[in-house]
Structures are given as C-alpha cells and as structure tokens.
Amino acid sequence: MDEFSKHERLILAVLEEAGEEHLSALVNTLEKRLLGNPPNRMQAVSTALTHLITRGLVRVARFRDKIHRRLVPLSLPDSISIVANLGSFLEWSHTDHIWRWKGGELLRTSF
Image (cartoon, rainbow, N blue to C red):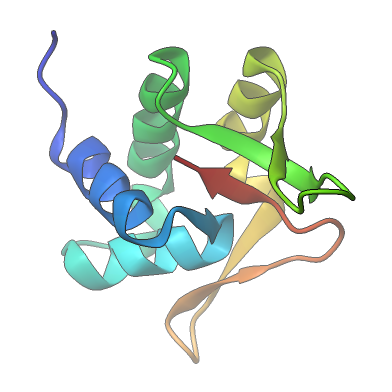
C-alpha cells in the first residue's frame, strides 16, 4: 500500500474519530492542526481528499436515507468533482480565521 501524506493521515484520523464531518468543519480542523497560510492550503486538502476518495476510503454525501438516517454517498466521480472544487463551496473568513460554508446543500464526508 502506498504511503499516506500528512494531510491524508490527518483526514483519516479526524473521520475515524467522528465517523462523518461537514466539509467546512473538516477543513477547519485541518487548519487548526497544520501550519501555513490557510487560503493557499485548500489545494493540498482537496488533493488529499481526492486521493482518499479514489482509494475508496472516503466519500462525500449530501443526504441521509429516510429509514436508517445513514449518509447516502455520492458516486466516485461526483465526490471527486466536489472536493476538486472546494473553493466554490467554502470561503475564508479573515476576521474569524475559519472556513465558512457559502450556502446551499451541506456536504459531509464519511469514513
């Protein structure tokens, strides 16, 4: 098995603990644990999530099924498309120093 990057390991650790997380909360958790200029790090997070999705370890979901309330994962191409465009869903708050969801449907990552 290939080695995981530090971003990939941290994402897996966060999702292992939580089981699922909103994308904005996941990105903010990574920001707290990693140093650097947050607005420029979005590409690294996007790349790490893409690698984890292509390995079948993480998926993005929008809805829960009505009976069991479990997340319904998006297809592999749809999950990759969303994380490849994280910047269109999140915006950096310079005053609060966190990533904020721009609106629309909430997206979750699941482990």
